[in-house]
Image (cartoon, rainbow, N blue to C red; front, side, top):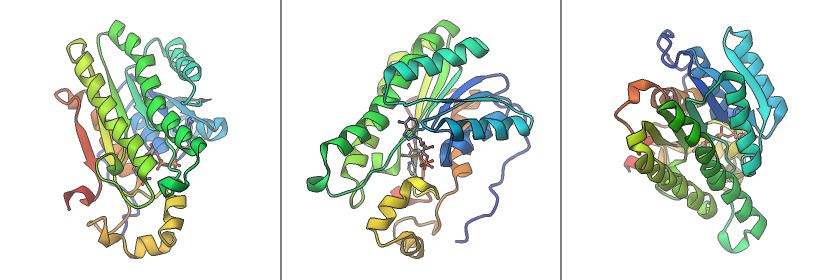
Length: 266
Ligand SMILES: NC(=O)c1ccc[n+]([C@@H]2O[C@H](COP(=O)([O-])OP(=O)(O)OC[C@H]3O[C@@H](n4cnc5c(N)ncnc54)[C@H](O)[C@@H]3O)[C@@H](O)[C@H]2O)c1
């Protein structure tokens, strides 16, 4: 199936109007698309990324399009920086209604060859980063009487693939930390859901693609693992994140939502 050049979206109707949204990893790929989608639907978006430049670029694009956004640096593997990111959103806009824990790394390899620092970095960013994010926003959401947390895991939180043992371990943890938060705060109006994307066309996959024989080869043979027959586009993940962030998903918490072109149906 050919990759669509545009991803259809209904005209904006303010689905997250005036909600204060924090998106990590907002400087690239899926996070950038999520920040745009939330802003298009009326959210005030704090775009945070390890790269301050790209975070500010996303915020500038949103502002240029008439939305409300600010960009700032964060290293989600630092609890102090994650706390400061959330405090900055509260200082600017008074509360946090939505957190999208999207920042992530994929550092592939065969486990017996993976050094300690790669294991540490993967778990620090992909697991601790999401725990720190949830922990930082929950007190504010409790005060406000609720909120929505959307974690970005992966199909590799459900099934693994060659060279992805460490990444898969981290993404499995993302699924389970989502369920834990969902259960502990369901009575206080905090919803927490997790998206498991399939192969989406972003730079995070490039190192993995190299180990699989190159990106061109992966895309030529994508039918063999992603039945829809093409990579996903970041906005196709962002549409689902927007829904989970919004009040339209009011009966959903602890849900594991595969957005994967059929990959995990096999
Ligand atoms: N692209 C895919 O096929 C795919 C599939 C499943 C899941 N995911 C997940 O989606 C999320 C977004 O990935 P993407 O595909 O947009 O990749 P990407 O590489 O385009 O974007 C990742 C962003 O995270 C940022 N980041 C990395 N480490 C950080 C840190 N310590 N603190 C703050 N920001 C940091 C990067 O600077 C980058 O802007 C990740 O969690 C990834 O695991 C991606």
